[in-house]
Image 1: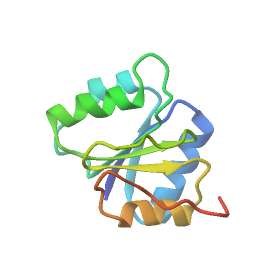
Image 2: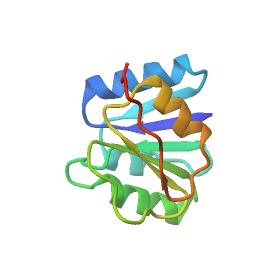
Image 3: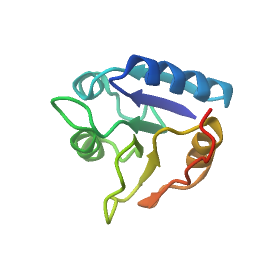
Image 4: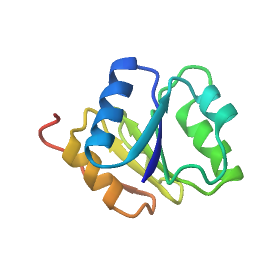
Length: 122
């Protein structure tokens, strides 16, 4: 899969990119929702992983903006509890997550459901 990671914490961004590459996916990352929105190309990614608590433009606002342009699959990666209902074509992956939980999230079809959490983050 081609994955765009939007994460403002450089260490979390780097670790997530490394895990995605270990899982055999092509991945790139940016540090802000504004950068992701401005550089996003329709059809360029299979999945966009977004931290919900981004400064300025939130991850939820970014997902809404991208969904209008390109119905891309979204995985919200955050330490926050999930909302009661998720938008269609999205998942909620709780931080901290390990490579197994990330693999499960990518393998699970998005349908507005919470991705399984990993008991042992790596």
